[in-house]
Length: 238
Ligand SMILES: NC(=O)c1ccc[n+]([C@@H]2O[C@H](COP(=O)([O-])OP(=O)(O)OC[C@H]3O[C@@H](n4cnc5c(N)ncnc54)[C@H](O)[C@@H]3O)[C@@H](O)[C@H]2O)c1
Image 1 (cartoon, helix red, strand yellow):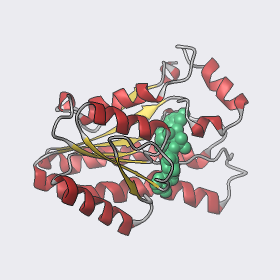
Image 2 (cartoon, rainbow, N blue to C red):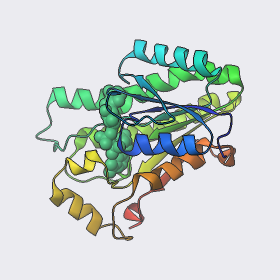
Image 3 (cartoon, protein in one colour):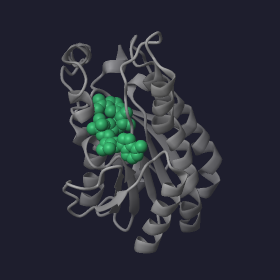
């Protein structure tokens, strides 16, 4: 029970990596509020589903208020919700760029801002911001994704140095290609190319990313802040 007595919010938790993280945390004893744009028709199980748009400041205020009212405290936030469009620099549009920056980047800031007062009251906290290997290295497509996921790295460092005095740790988590709806929606050619470039020779399972999030969220990582944990089968090692 590595998260016994902890209370966690995971965003984008209706499916994919977010759902795997929420379930993994619950297995380890956490009370988990699983927030997403879509909370109907999904198997919440031991999780507490919450209708939430990460780009909406009011939605964050309600999420934090209701979590602390229900469970009495807040220890962990995983800023996981994210979207991708595969647009090159020349093909990107202002509308698509702005939406991706709003969801992947701006929401990470407003999420950290929303939870810190409750964590401070509780005396400690852990924030895990989900970036990507594509926040560290690039391909010709996905310009807005690269921009937003790279920003998450330095925003996490900024959070780490801002809130260390409050015993709130902030780290970035970088999954490699992970077998979720996001990947199933992209062209098989892109997926095949990334798998071929992955030394371990396969895509990542959502639970393997969740294990990384679990480490960063738990007290086992009590001296780990402002850093990046890469779970990518060696993709960025070359
Ligand atoms: N799958 C991968 O290969 C991969 C690799 C690296 C990083 N990531 C990152 O991991 C995270 C999860 O990815 P995934 O593959 O599980 O994606 P996914 O598309 O399968 O799931 C994303 C979830 O986020 C939710 N969401 C989207 N916009 C939202 C919003 N505005 N407010 C609240 N929820 C919203 C969706 O409803 C969905 O349930 C993302 O940040 C993604 O960029 C994924």
